[in-house]
Amino acid sequence: MSANKVWQCITCGWIYSEAEGLPDEDIAPGTAWEDVPEDWCCPDCGMDKSDFTMVEVGSNGLGF
Ligand SMILES: [Zn+2]
View 1 (cartoon, rainbow, N blue to C red):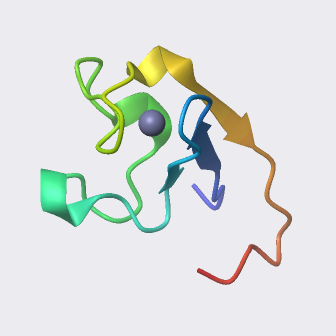
View 2: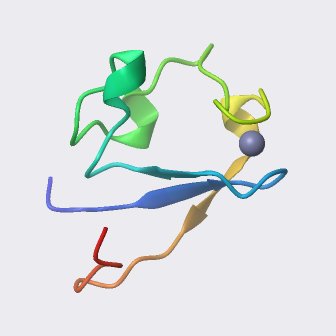
View 3: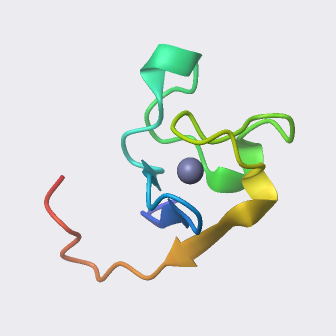
């Protein structure tokens, strides 16, 4: 459970961080991407969850 993956919308570049979650949409910090509801979509452009791609993050993270 120490993974801290970051997923990026391939359309607009919006980023979802598993460490931060998305409290505005009831996705708690630490929520794994696989646990994000399938009907969730990008808050910026509305693309489906399937249109996000994983961005590798080192153990030192990106600092956000
Ligand atoms: Zn987007």
